[in-house]
Image (cartoon, rainbow, N blue to C red; front, side, top):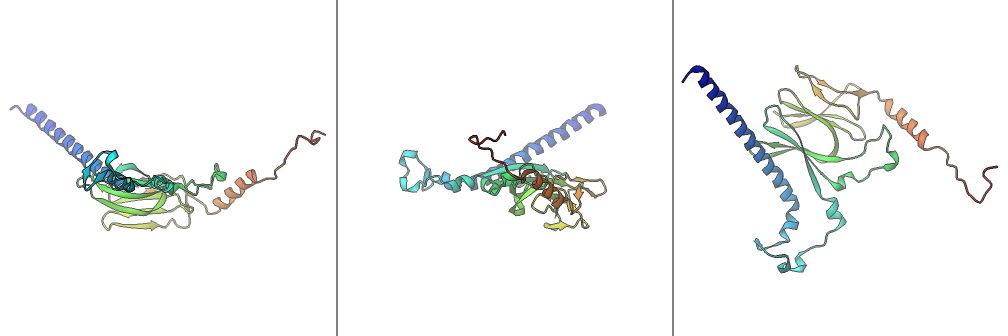
Length: 235
């Protein structure tokens, strides 16, 4: 076989191998996410089964069916997929429930100092095996997340009442809070890693929060005037 033709065959074989690996990773990740959903919905699915055998709804004992309650609706979980690690071995996944968002204060809509709560749990899915690693088990409001260029660290910006920067270390499997030298992480900060392993983010001075909150309160908390049509208010 001529060298040029052999080179084309080699490149084609390598490309096909990569595509096959990519499809296999997608199937594994999809299976892992499906397993999470099945685990969440298992009680309701089990209501349509008797001793492991699938039966018609009419055959299910009425006593085995529990009514749908507001608590059930608030416990419905949503799964969103984030970024792959640079080597494609790990995938970031967020899990949240409808109930996690309770506590939203509509009166502070438009307040730059207020962040609408949208807590979620964060875990990593191994794209080869489907195994999961929990990073954040207790729900927290999460902002930006970014992998380091070498995939050794995952930076996470929280948007809690006091925003913080978290660093997940892949080698030690530990999550730590990164100090910012007296500065305050900006609620809308993006995260970007440089090629030499440094992290770029936006910070604010600590005096920013009370100043902005006081300014917002002065705009929406002023005196209220009530005009009654039966009184000569035009005079």
